[in-house]
Every structure is written in C-alpha cells, then in structure tokens.
Amino acid sequence: MWQVLTAVIIIYTAMLTVRNLVRMVKIQSRISLLEDQRDFFQQRISEDSTLLERLNYDEYLEQYAREKFHMQRPNEYIYILED
Image (cartoon, rainbow, N blue to C red; front, side, top):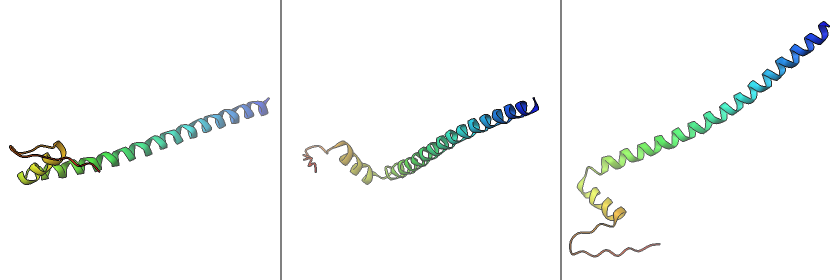
C-alpha cells in the first residue's frame, strides 16, 4: 500500500515538474521575443530623435521635404529618377 502511494506521489510530482519546465521554456522564448522588440524600438526611437533634431535646421528641413515628399519651389521642375 505504501509503495503504491509513494509511486503516485512521485508520478504526480514528476508531472508537475515537467509542466512547469514547459511553461518556463515558453516564458523564456516570450521574454527573448520581447527583448528583441524592445531593442528594435529603442533603435527606432534613437533614429527618430536624431531626425527631429536635424529637422530644427532649415537647410535639412528643405532637403528632407524635397527628398521624401518631392516638394519643389515655385517655378521649379523636379524629375524623379528611380533606380
């Protein structure tokens, strides 16, 4: 009788341990994914902050508007060449 009860307790403990290990692996993979996203967005924030600083200067603002939005001055023609 004691042997059966001990076996049941050992099996139950093993099942809980395996379930917790599986859950831990899933959580670790999720943490890794979130850390990668965090790094991506931190880099993006840094790039955008640099762009905002540069846009404070009129020369760069004009260059940016011309390149990104194909803006032009009055009486000026722009030809767009694509690679």
